[in-house]
Length: 148
Image (cartoon, rainbow, N blue to C red; front, side, top):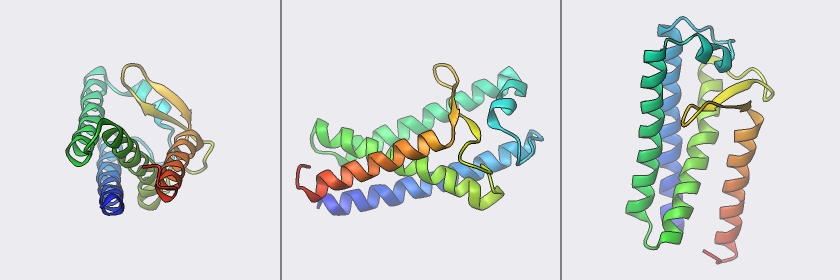
C-alpha cells in the first residue's frame, strides 16, 4: 500500500509541476519576460501587485501539497514523508517542465527565485534540483530498507 501511495503522489507531483510550469510560461509571456531572462531580474521588475498575486500562487501550491499529504498519510510521520516526497517531485519536475517548454533554465548555474514567501529565496537552479533529488533518493532508500 505504501508503494502505491508513493507512486500516486509522485504522479501528482509531476502533474502539478507541469501545470505550474505552463502557468509560469504564460506569466512570463504576458509580462514580457524573455525566456532567457533570470527570474531574479524579472522579480525586481515585476509590479508589486503582481508580486503579491504570485505570492498567493506559491502559498496555494504549498497548501495543496500539505492537504494531499494530510489526506493520504495515516500518521504524522507519514504525512511529513508524503509532503516531502510530493514536494520533491513537484519541485524537481517543475524545472524539467520549464526546460522542455522553453529551454529554461539554460544551465544549472542559472540564478532563480525559489520562493517569494516570506522573502525572496534566491539560489542557482542546481540547489533545489539537488535537494529535491536527494529527498527522493533518501525516502526511496528508507522505503526499501522498510524503515517507512
